[in-house]
Image (cartoon, rainbow, N blue to C red; front, top):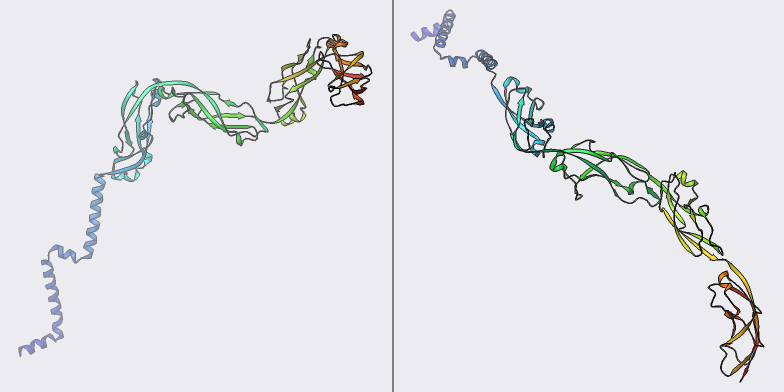
Length: 444
């Protein structure tokens, strides 16, 4: 019965509001008894609000403390200072250590707010040589600085260097030619500007320098050459010097000008240069130049109008024999070069020739075979001789031998040319009248 009453009561709509009211009250009572964490874990709004408060608190703390952070700046270039101070004291760095010519990585400690501002542009690494006052070996420190924060260390912190006396020297410049210029061209005199220059640096290195050299390939030249060329320093053993820390007054190059000209073979003329007269009784019969031509170089317009090159003046006074004279050549002002400056003149001097006739010169018989006799019918000839006057004046009829050579003749009558032999004459020409003789050979 009681169960039925309860069932009826529960199904009674008049009893429902009272039950819901009671359940809400019960939940509130239970919620008051839950721990705070459990309540938060079941409340999204509280979670979001807690996160916002946490961020605000962290930002406030950070803005008040600005804690430092470490940062590495890579490849900071090393700057060397104080070199002018060394120079003013007549000192020089013997060589720059390889590490000093490179870069370093720098470790910085930077406030958090400035961390993003740090770059290679506001970090410096310097080596200061201004405090060095005498020659010797030194250990110098690398000085680090940064616009933001402070530099703690670098990959290299010090360097060992050596300081020497500062030395000055004058260095001449040479041209080294390679290749071969075309044979139809001529290379003029090279002009180097400047021909020498000044260098300064550590005395050990400066004293090694003997000369500077530039290289020119002649094989590539077809016209005049003007160019600025980089030179190389060499020592006395012709070995290149690799030292790069010289103070050079002109930089690293010189101007080189090399004129290149076309060439031409030109005949040698002597006629207008000859003076004087050979000795009485002699005649200058021939003059020959050796060589007969000379190669010259000039602008093409000059070569086109150039026919001969003259010798300097020479005299044949009192010559009485063949002579060789060495004479210089006259170089025209517009000719840049001549292959030869002198030539030999071969002078042929002959004595004056005279003619004389010797009458009734007997004719001899030569080479007649044994067992034969000959009748020349008392042959005689007139001999007309042309020979040097002095020799001809000393010649007599007895010095003249006119003869018949009968080596190939036998019995019978024949005709043979008369031959002539004059040993006292060095040179001559002759005619005979008659020039043929009739003779008869008989057996004994």
